[in-house]
Amino acid sequence: MRQHYGKMNHPELQACLKPTELIYVCKETLPIITYTPNEDCEATLIHPSTTSFPKGLCEQRILSLDQTYWIPLHMSNEWLYISPKDDIFTVLCGNDKSQMKLQGRGKLHLPPRCKGYSTHSTLYAISTIVSNNSKDDVLPLAPVDLDCCLSEQEREQLSEMSLNRPLTYILSSVEDLNIASAKIDVIQDMNQEE
Image 1 (cartoon, helix red, strand yellow):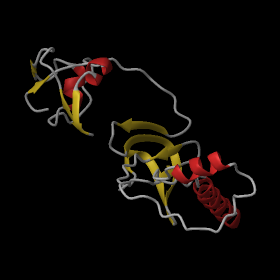
Image 2 (cartoon, rainbow, N blue to C red):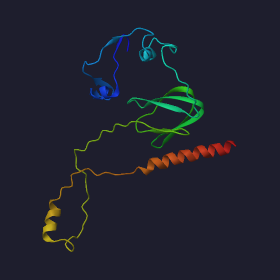
Image 3 (cartoon, rainbow, N blue to C red):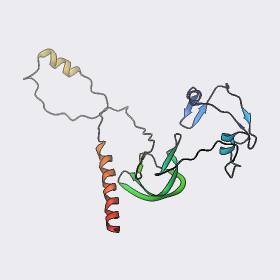
Image 4 (cartoon, rainbow, N blue to C red):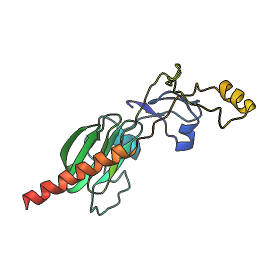
């Protein structure tokens, strides 16, 4: 946003075409407004020229924070955070593990297929996985004698059965084991410090 903007609610945004994850193409049903500094709260807050909070223009509320507060940024694997006290944030990407200290406020980015956790929250990065399912899975030929158990009609149906659907492997518990392992490491580090 530089000079012009338009406001829309979530249902209006959902009605737009979405050629990519971050681009929306919408009908011209909402008014396009010319930006004037300190006239509209939201527009002033996100405008690049704004350097301080526009007092008196925006409604303010006081919120008491006891733990880190996360604000997800739409479809970006990024979060804004406000941490009232130092908080350790652990990132798990496959077998790689890293830690950082969250202090004050900032923006955090997670690579795709990674997850991160702090004392009270777990964040999951959005993953886009592209796979080629055009080839059939290769199934080894195993000598299985089915003559004892099947009728002639059942044997014919079995030989005609198509197995060209991709196989699915479910191994979700590995991620849970990685998180548990990282949490144990944090606890051991805390015990060693004491």
